[in-house]
Length: 411
Ligand code: AMP
Image (cartoon, helix red, strand yellow):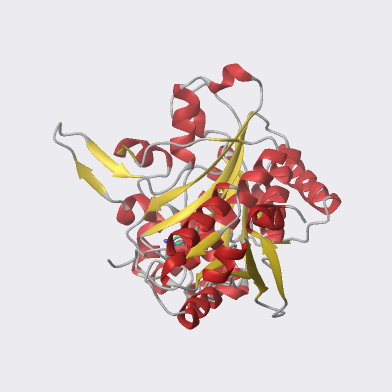
């Protein structure tokens, strides 16, 4: 189906490796995993992400259930995570709550490379600290994960959109600047001028970008506290050894951000270069009915990261070590038993269930990247020892059947 894909065994291996790196790194950074339902009340996203955002206005898979509730397949995971944080009173566990997720999302977008309708994200949310070192920790966490996954050529782009009152002043100034130029703007931007003017800064239209080059810079509207927050964040990033660039147009598409916004891009993914987006959302929890609590987080797209890491090439089924070759009809059940015995002892093993020739079995061993073949024929069965062949080097040795498990389990 459009915008969805099946992950076949040669890809799921890569996915599991990536998932392991993410779980291990999150654990090392003391983030606990949260899993929320695939659907939520539609209202949750409308209230948090914003009615005017692309996600809510045109990308949600929304349906009415038999009880006439309006439900939506989750298009992002910060709002569900905050809903759960409030609902389960996780604040009770301490002043700082660190959560992470790794799950599937749904957005009705125009599919292209790196843009799917069902896709996967992992993300982290640090809830409770208003301070810039927390923003820096979150940015360094995603950088650490991307580095471990072998994603190179990263660009970290940051900005601050200030707290609500600085942003209101800036919004007015931006509208004053753009109103006389309205006719030169696209239809979407003209509409946004009334509904959500900051989003115009996100435009990918080069003509509009040229107009916006002269637009007022939000930095000039930040108050003293916003400014020192942003400066301290930059100092921390420098201390962590993270290179970054400021982009004054980075406002991000979701309504809930305050102060810090950031994005990590990689040219390796082509047009859809954003691997990760995030920022601070100090007002969201209160907006959703919780006690006012500052928070900062990120979400990163797994499909794009795999493209950026150059891992979408075919990888063969790895880890299959021993192929037990049935040499004669008489040894069929002995071969099955030997393979089973190896597996029970934690050794990856295969045997032939298609009753193929020895040659065909060796071809299969090769396809599975087996490291060893064990030949089991009448002679071997009678003598009680089998022929073990290292498939790479061709080296062959005889091993007593009762020692075969220890041969593969003890180095
Ligand atoms: P967002 O939730 O829009 O801030 O997106 C965060 C990250 O999720 C992006 O940087 C992408 O890596 C990924 N992403 C967003 N939308 C899609 C999509 N439709 N298909 C694949 N990945 C996506």
